[in-house]
Each structure stands twice: as C-alpha cells, then as structure tokens.
Length: 108
Image (tube, one colour):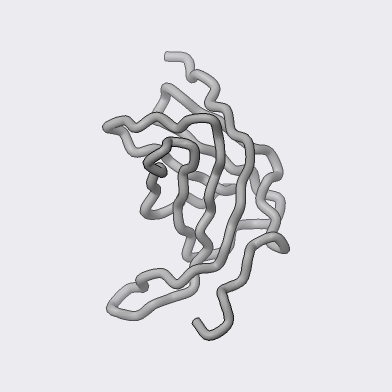
C-alpha cells in the first residue's frame, strides 16, 4: 500500500516538566508540529524526531497541531516526521534546532 503525503508546515519545541519513572518529575522536550490538518483516527500517529519516537502523542481538538514528548533532547538538525502506519506520512527535513527550544520558565 502506498503512503500518502501528509503536509507539515512547521515545528516548535519547549522544555517542560514531565512525569518521570516513579513519582518524580523530569525535564523533557515537548515538540509541536503544525499542519493544515491531522486526522483523528483509531491509529495513534507516530511523531519521530531523528531516530527518537515521542511519548504521549496527541492531536489538538482543532486538528491543526500534533504534539509529543521526548525525555532526551533530539539531535540538532534532525528531521521531524509524522506517520500514520503505512498510509500517511509527512517529513520536515533538518527541522529540529536545539537553540530554538524554549527554556522552562524561571521558578519551575
């Protein structure tokens, strides 16, 4: 089955506090990908930056953004891919920039 192209228009990232292993909280990177539409399907899409797969991937109610969390900061210049199994995929080449990841607010 051929994959159809999923249009992606941009990406942003920020450091956030994220549930760790036990009951601790760790710093993670939340990556948000923008596009005209991300379909809500029974199959949860994959959000991949470089070789790393995001955890807790979700689509915004308006269907225009998808976000996921990375416990380790992805590699500089990594491609950002959103994939729905073997049917739909979009990639932003060399889209991830570590210097553009927004820091945690002071006091967190």
